[in-house]
Image 1 (tube, helix red, strand yellow):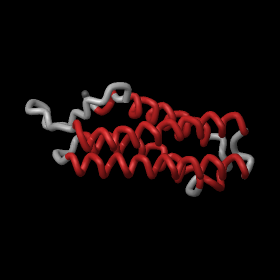
Image 2 (cartoon, helix red, strand yellow):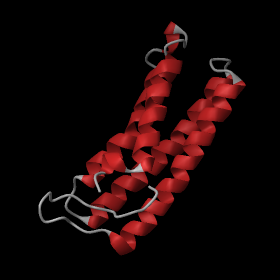
Image 3 (tube, one colour):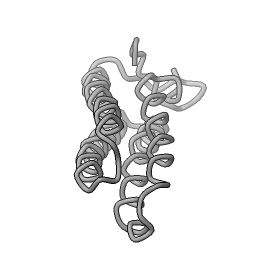
Image 4 (tube, one colour):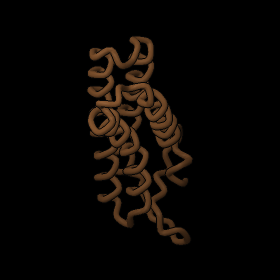
Length: 134
């Protein structure tokens, strides 16, 4: 299975697109601050999944899954800060926070599954986590 076929990748990509959309309305003074930080954190989740999935080592893949999970946690704080500063509404905050909590759980399961079921495919030289529902 390709990384981009994993549900966790699809959801993290979707939330990255939403992050770009909601940060367009942030104050101009935040362009190089919170706006930039949120966009980097959000895109880090699927980007690290993709990079890890293209590594040859199971341990490297696990490492990148762990980085993705850390970025998901970072996004939860940036969302809270954005809400408390009045940059996003509460309903947007709760929707996005719920999405990142789901991603964190999915990444935890993916990480655990890599301990037991990761393999390198002979034809693609990529990891195939063989994780159902991810």
